Length: 116
Length: 117
Image (cartoon, rainbow over all chains, first blue to last red; front, side, top):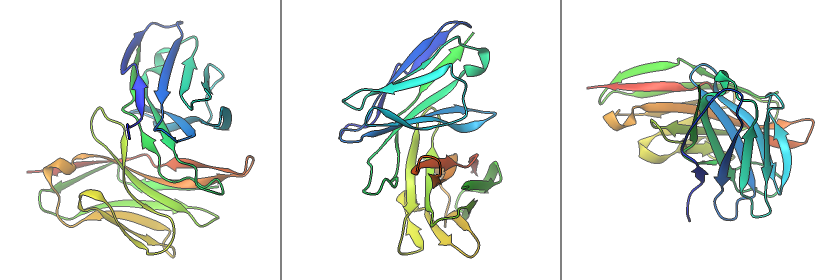
């Protein structure tokens, strides 16, 4: 099976712009989660989508949003970019076990966003 | 609420020495516990996981971890470090979100392992 893919791998934007990142999960995985990783804050959970519905959400401002399509592909959008949004954005997909418990997450390589 | 604490943001070991990375968790329900590894410029890769059953869990690349409920720990070990083990390691617990009744991952802050020649 192909792994989780994320596009683009690298992105440079300026303050005030918006950006859309894309994630294609492993075939058959219906849960997709997004994380922000920075040297100072570590790995922080953004949100999780399951069957096109946002199921969990982290503590990020409303500038961060996402969606999931019927084929489980997901996008996240960041509007009005700030310098502090520079980070590695990781997407992870997961097979959902009966009862809703998580099994392991499978991570993509990430999108490195630089905001100038 | 669930939480994960990784002791030591940086750990250095000599090649061939024992690797011990510490992880303690807090969970009000039986936890699902995971260790992930991240190499530079890559995503996270699962090393091993504990869900139920045997408390000593073996993973890839010679790593293993033992679930100790009485100590609320899930430390990662490897008998003999190799240069290729240099990476960042994350402990995670699958935790219940009370408001939604669903589960989400909670990651520790990570431990960067350096292997000295």
